[in-house]
Length: 194
Image 1: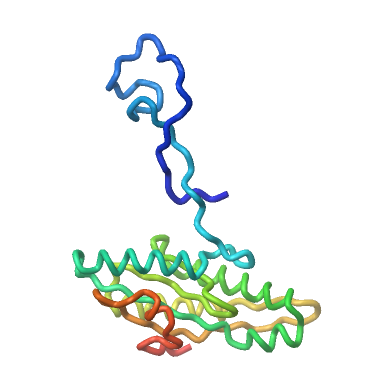
Image 2 (image 1 turned 30 degrees about the vertical axis):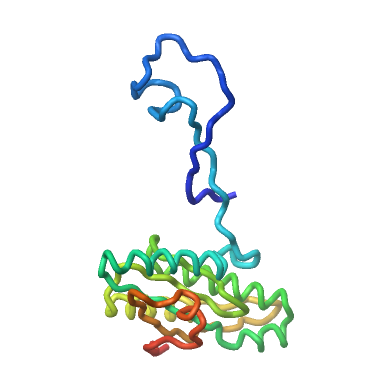
C-alpha cells in the first residue's frame, strides 16, 4: 500500500506516561498533541496494469492545481501521450503483450519527468502528465524527453522485439479552466516532434 498523505486520528485512550510534561517535544507521539496518532490516509487510486495514477486522481490534482493557479500566477501544462500502435500490438500479440507495452511506456514516461509531476494512465493507451509551475519552454523539453525515453525502449515479446513510441501533445492551462474539459482534449495545443 502506498501512503501519499497522513491523517491524524485519535488513538485509543491510555494512561499518560510518567515524567512527560504536556507540550514538550520529547513527549510520546513525537511532539504531536496528546490523543492524536498518525494513520495512513486512503491510498491514491492506481491503474492496475501500470501502477500509475488513474484519470480520477489526475483530475482531482488538476482541479487543485487550477484552483491554486489564480493565487500563484505560474503557468502549468498537461502533456498528453498516446501509445502508438497499441491496438496493433494487442491484435497481433494479445492482451498480455499490450499490457506489457503499457507498463514499458509508463516506466519510460516516469523516468523522463520530475518527481513533483503526476503521471496517469487515463484510458487505453493514453497517458497524461500534469506539470505544475513550469514555463512553456520547459514543458516542451519534458515532452521531448518523454518521446525520446519511450522510443528508446523495445517490447521483447516471444521471439519479437517490438519498437514502441508515443505521440505527444501539450495543453497549457490557465486560471478559470475546467479540469474535465482540459482532460477531454484529444490533442494538445502544441505538437512535439517525435
